[in-house]
Image 1 (cartoon, rainbow, N blue to C red):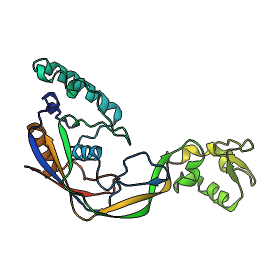
Image 2 (cartoon, one colour; image 1 turned 90 degrees about the vertical axis):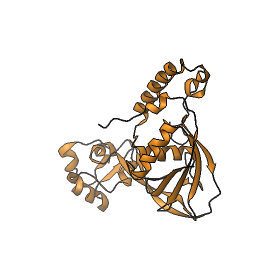
Image 3 (cartoon, rainbow, N blue to C red; image 1 turned 180 degrees about the vertical axis):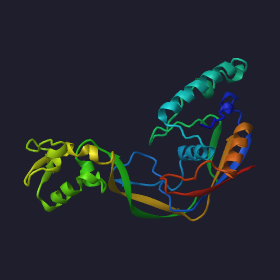
Image 4 (cartoon, rainbow, N blue to C red; image 1 turned 90 degrees about the horizontal axis):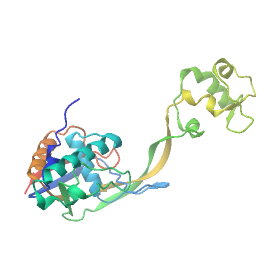
Length: 261
């Protein structure tokens, strides 16, 4: 596994570099900033945490929640040791603050102390439309059954019989849990508990959801402040990103340029 250089975090967050981040949308964007209900409403512009996510994606920092928390805890311990030599920073959020997570998914950025966004240079007009989006969900109940087109090939005959009405699936008391041959050779009229086939379906099922998309009429321009070390990392990252770049949903492809001012 490639080593990730996070030594910048040990340096005090002296934000002496001003830079401009230009984001050009290559596809419609859906930038949902809160836990949605039945409708996924997009923001007209990326939120601060979406921008942090964009930077980390370009840098190749793909850490899930548990290792990310461990890394952040270890970095803050090292930073505290470093701050003993620099009393001016001893009470700064970099040392004493609790890392802040995004409200929508709890994403905690490793850059939050060393990059500060000053907002959009100017508002960007957007056109909007709604589309159906295939949301991937996990369910231990019966929702998986109607939400997935895919299942184990051994169920082909049984699923055909279910569509013809020869057998019935359900989760009431009269529906019986069947296994192995007794499942595949169930008699006509059998009432079968959903649990009988759960292991032969994907862990996730698809639920069509109405999602709002925006089409920006011009690029997004964000001014940011950062440290020399982080700025050098970002220049290299956006010249040769470690992963495809997107904002919001993973079909919101973008092209990004980074320039020091």
